[in-house]
Image (cartoon, rainbow, N blue to C red; front, top):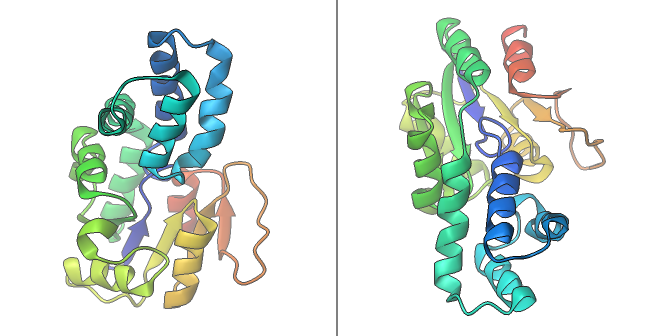
Length: 214
């Protein structure tokens, strides 16, 4: 029963779509031009920008009097509220489980936000457990977080696969711990010369099929 170590955002759960939907509603609510969604998506940098920095940028651009902490809460809760579990992803996880694989989520982020996504979408019913960097005290690509995931479900790392969309956090992390990996390219081209994924596919369903196919 090998481990299937899975990233969360833009791997198990789409983040880009929910962020866009939240952003469009937010901009409409403050009377900003709809075209500003491109600026908002750009400055968000696919979720890599610190939430406090993003909140400050929004406040400065639109001269809002909303306290930064309230805007950070809006960013967190608004995106979570827009997040849904794709039924095909749930089906793929069930197939992996039936085939003897043990799916475990390994993600960077805060417990409050990431666990809310896992529970509110029902993803918790399809994975054995999850490890979130804030609680673990270590973030991907550090090999320790993958070791902690294995310890959480009392299984060895040997034979595990890592699946994710981040070149550095997921594929770099897999390379650091000596595990094979599947990169969800999302239309991008691999460019890192330090390491490379074992496989490259366009989505979670294809990733699970690749792992199960050996």
